[in-house]
Length: 149
Image (tube, rainbow, N blue to C red; front, side):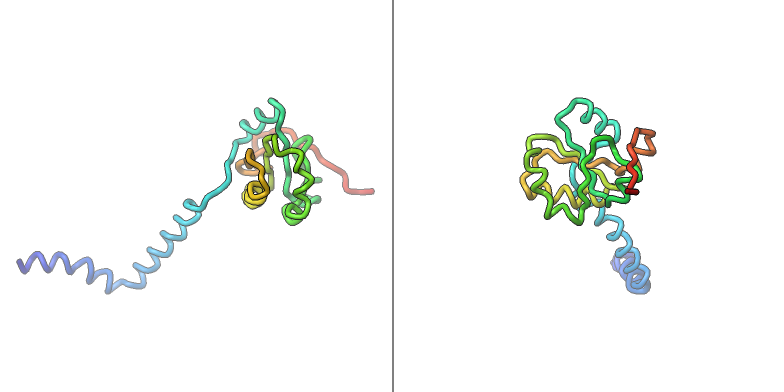
């Protein structure tokens, strides 16, 4: 009986003796797990977005700044920066029956835009997984604008 209590107490004693290290392990594990558990919008790969665009009835919404948009964007994309989306979302009302593909630089801003669009009644909204960076990495075409007047 004495041997049993010794083996049960040993892991607890180890944790107490190393509480600081144990705490760091728990916090770092939680930090890695939390982003994976947070809900993200529906995503599509560069290939899937290309197929959607080719089928038609798809609108590409680029939520990057005008300067980022000018450096290279998907052809026929509509640019409404994320900072302006809440005030300009009415510009998209006539497109509620279409699929909206939201693009930003890497995908983080697109998730925020999807939440706003979904709250405004858009049902078919996806983001480009990896953003324009993934699009360009796949050697897909972009259009550049000149900002000079």
